[in-house]
Amino acid sequence: MSYTNFQENWFIFGNATPLGDDVIRRRKNNKCKEAGVKVIRIHDFRHSCASLLINNGADITLVAKYLGHSKIDETLNTYSPMFKNKLDNIIGLIDK
Image 1 (cartoon, rainbow, N blue to C red):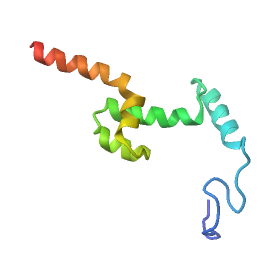
Image 2: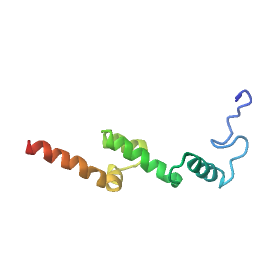
Image 3: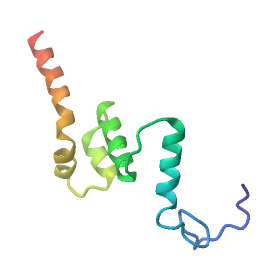
Image 4: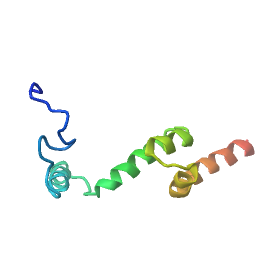
């Protein structure tokens, strides 16, 4: 793919004109079906990313900033169920 004709005023998805409302969703659904994985909403990719970061030990403050949350409370409230396993791990450490 050549970018020699790139224009600063182009859209992120598309070129001189934006992709239609359903194009990204339709392509995502087709790729999910081809891969044999569950079809999820576009927004679910955001949750998956945050979940992977948290489960792999990323600092919650940085995750909140990455997601664009203005307050860490928003991130904590949304993803607090994920911290149950971490709490169990801490309790296990104390018990040892």
